[in-house]
Amino acid sequence: QVRLVESGGGLVQPGGSLRLSCAASGSIVRIKSMGWYRQAPGKQRELVAEIRSGGSTNYVDSVKGRFAISRDTAKNTVYLQMSGLKPEDTAVYYCNVVSGWVATTYYWGQGTQVAVSS
Image 1 (cartoon, one colour):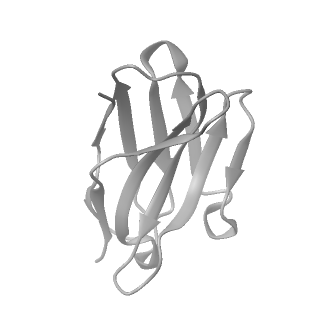
Image 2 (cartoon, rainbow, N blue to C red):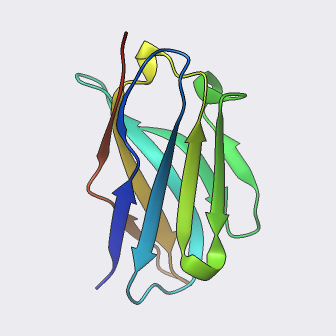
């Protein structure tokens, strides 16, 4: 049983910062990537940032230069440092882990709310 536990969401003023954490536990076979998605009310879930097994990263254009994804491979933990937060960053943020050798399995966290408002 694989479990993803997220933490770090909350309410912050525009321009503020938050750090999200996601710890993966259980029998995970070969992590291919770890990442963060978000879903705002009335919108589709979108990829925010991901970090692949080799360490390369990918960000959605709207967060480039403001967000930074990192990981602790020993702890199977991924982080999302968010700075310069804007009201449009308000969403539920979901941790995602992609694993497997031939077949691919996707794991999701329960989601953590990030609200940016004055």
